[in-house]
Every structure is written in structure tokens, then in C-alpha cells.
Image (cartoon, rainbow, N blue to C red; front, top):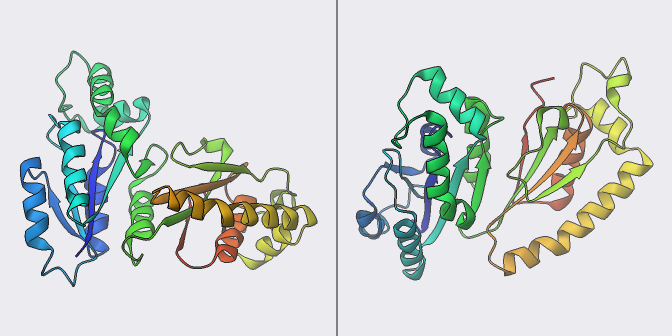
Length: 281
């Protein structure tokens, strides 16, 4: 077991869901371990962890997390030869407020209000957000969508390889804040206005063929794949371990879905695909 994932993030951003999803993906998950013990536990777990995908530490659930200490710990793990990565979970402030008010939980950061507590925690954790190998914005994701995205990102992908995620989304539901590159597909003919295609999605052949066969789509696909084929290795050489490209259309049901699937196919192996809004429309 050489793969180590440290999961941190804003309170209410989904660490419990991520923990369960990682366990489902055959990760060994340890929750709220003191930072002083992470390196030692990693050393003990390494020799006998062949049946596990990797070892994940969920940190900071009780508040009081020291970001600088955590970053030093991750640096120590890397110096010892572990493929240690930091995943940071985030969501917009209004979403976090709604989640805390909805379940009436007390925010772990003491403050005069939930809003002030969230802002204080955000300021505290900023070094982790800026240093993370992967940031996931859970604001637009329900529990099942978040579990599915974690499974797609962390299941059956070789340790140490660069992880490429292709995402589709609808502009009507907001631009994903965690994408490295965002591409607009709204210039393509919209299957929504074709009566026999409207109820279908870009995952179905009739819609996919309608979108992808268009001359503008073919040129777009060729140009984007060409760009990514030289850009991805350059990012990998610079040490980037996760790369996310998002394709958007109006509702996230037809054009962006079909294009995302086609891009993933053309890029080849080691690519995961996530359709954020295909079930919303």
C-alpha cells in the first residue's frame, strides 16, 4: 500500500460521504486520527495492505485542525516514498449555511453565528485549499452524486498516475468551481429542440450521433483533444496529479454529455467521466 489520501475541507462539505465512498472503493479509512500519528500509522499499514486500494485519513472533523502541521505531515509522507495526496472538499458559503441550519448541527468553529464560523474556518483552511492536489466543490452535488464522483476518481486507477476527469454540466445550474478547464458547447445544435430527442440524453446513441456528427462538433473535438494531448503530459511533468476538464451546455443533458463522452473515448484509458446534471433535466 503506497497510496495515501488525506481528506480535509470545510465542515458540512461532505467528509462523511467521502469516507463511506472510499470504503466502498476498497480504501482503508481512518477517521480523525491525531496528526502526530498519521506518519507512524502509514508506516505500520504499508507492509500488509496489498488487498486495499490505499489508506485514507479523514482529518479535521472535530475542528481545531492545524493546516501547517498537516502540510508538513504530507511532505514527510512523500519524503518516505508514499504517494500522498491531499483532497480538499468545499462548497459555497450559502450552501454550508443551509446544511447546518437544515440539520441543526453546531458548527465546530466557535463563533457568534454560523456565517461567521464558516468564514473563520475558510480563512483558517485556506493554505490547505491552495495546496490541495484535488479540490471538489460539493455545493451542486447531492449525496449520491458525490459518492459516484469519489468512486470514479479513486477506484481502479493505478497509484501514482495522473488522474484525468472529464465532466459535463449545465450552465443553468452553475459553472463547476473545481474544474481546471471549462469548455462551452452551447454553439452546437441543441437536441432539446428536436422533439424525438428531447427526452433522451447524451448518453444515448441517437443524441450522441446528432451532436457529434455535426461539422462544428468534429472540429471542436479535434482541436480540444489535440490541446489536451500535449497539455496533460506537461501538467504531469510539473507534478500535477489531478486534471479536470468540464464541458457545459444549457441544461447539462444533451450536448455537454455527448461531447464529454466522446472526448473521454478519444483520450483513451485512465480517464473518468462525471455527468453532474444529466439527471436534473
